[in-house]
Amino acid sequence: MKHHISANRLISLALVLALLPVALAFAGIPASAAGNNRSVTIYRTEAEMTLDGLVSEGEEWDHVAWSWDFTNAGGTGAMQEGFRARFKSMWKSEGEARCLYYLIEVTDATPSAATDWTKDGFVFLIDETGERKTNPAVNSETGTSRRCGTLSTTTVESSPVLTYALRRSETQYTVELRYEFANPDCCAPGGSVAFDLFIQDNCGAGSYRRLSWNGTNNVDVIANTGTGVISDVSVCAAATEIDGAGRSYTLYRADGEMTIDGVAGEGEHWENLPWSEPLAQIGILGEQTQAFGARFKAMWDPEGFLYLLIDVKDATAVDAENGQTGYVWTQDGFIFCISESGAGRGIVSSDLTDANSAPDRRTSTLSSVNPAWTSGGVEPEWFSYALVRNETGVMIEARYTFSDKANAAANRRILLDVMVQDSLAEGAPTNDTGYEQMWWNSLTGKTASNHGIEYAGEGWLSPVGASAVISLQTQYGAAVRLASPSGLRYETHIDKAAYDALVASGATVTTGTLILPTDYLTANGVCAGAVSMELLDSLEITYLNIVNSGWANADTAETDGYYCWYGSIVNMKPENYDRAFTGVGYVTVTLEDGSSYTLYGGCAASASSRSVRAVAQAAIDSGDYSDNEEALAILQGFLQ
Image (cartoon, rainbow, N blue to C red; front, side, top):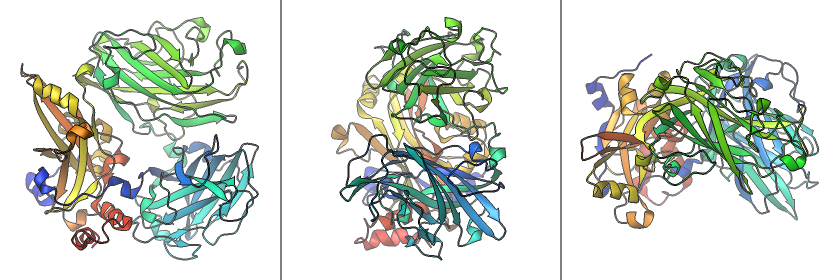
């Protein structure tokens, strides 16, 4: 369904200002005030649940994707090697009750005997309303903003907030917990809850180290929590959806001399391009004992090629010294799949012949140690690569040849995905060796390499050459504009040296910010990272185009190394205070010959989508404005 608003209604929604530096009398609210603002969709389950710390048959945990790994949340002790955590979540209607279920997996090989508050344990906090107005009451049996005390992960303890079970192995343990809503009405499809999980590791001598899902370090502040979106879609239905995790990547046009040698060579312009989001784990068989991760860059060539640069963090390679002599599918490796048409027809064969279901194709598991160790010892005619290994991992550079050169054209949409795999073999891998797999578009329910292009993310082929790409990034989150008229403000940075060079060359450079309701994007299946004026216009999505007319950091740009500008939506109606808006900065370059191109600083929707009420509440809770009555009055006005 398309969303339209008339010009008159758009004006009544908000007056739009391009912010001049003189208008910045009040500082904005730092985006970090609301933590990392991670978000997860919580799907519905109807399965029988047994709290035993296990993935029991029929519980549907296997259909739920793992969260992002938790991040360092501080502490008084040293971080233990390999300490990591992640979770899965579902919700369930149980008679009159509504419950959240979590399965938490923690890697911690050294269980502690400590019993005080620094013990091995976890903390769960939640605001059922999602409003983040009231800090959680500890161990309260009532109220919608609650948290448990630090509950032991060496032995089960009782809590008025939740119930849980443990299961421990030599190097890991799992926590399976059930939380019952104090107000069942808060668990409503389409709504959201605010929550976070902390995992604590006792480091000895009364010291500890914590991990947090939302990347913040205060278990008492509800403003720092992430978001759980309650979905009425069942877990099993979500596992079969074909729109993946909704990831999107802009591929700029290759305009340098490309050499496939595993090195981001001079003149190839890889350094200008953004990295993808980190790949996310969707499967593991065995126990991972080291850090493992990956990301990629990509560009296209009108001669009919697509280029990849994959950066893999994997310090130990399964190599010839360990006895590897040929192809084994559980080896250290990677997979690339593509739908040149952008349609995607489902699972794609890994047959490496040129007749591999073109225009939908998928490689087999290609070795990330030796390119010769592929299926049958040969590479497909349409995919070649080289790699260079260092102490911490491997860099892979690859070239894909389109089955139809006409599919390599500007302003086209393709589907693509990248998988990396880490063999868990101590020696030479076999077909029974354990492995860990990560995909870029980590669809819920996606399993290993058995799901193909239907589950891939989007790639947009930009006409802009890689050499012309400028470092441009809309900053994480949003801020409250405190200058009159007040509103919701987005911030974008552009590399100063690149900007100055364009101006010196005679180019005309225009910067600005696009702002629109996030629901306009989601209703049309558009990722924030793919936002462009051309795309929005083609979908008849109305947006605010706020042209910038001055640098917010004019006095410090030389030191900062970038220019900064703001775009704000102001004079908002109260009924829109709870509505999330997305902001994306852009730069349009018009060359002396009259040709022009536009670059965008978009990012994931969860990073740039905010409501003014949530941002104002986070600012108040931060305490940064407790002595500024004028600022507090403005902030509190958005909470009415």
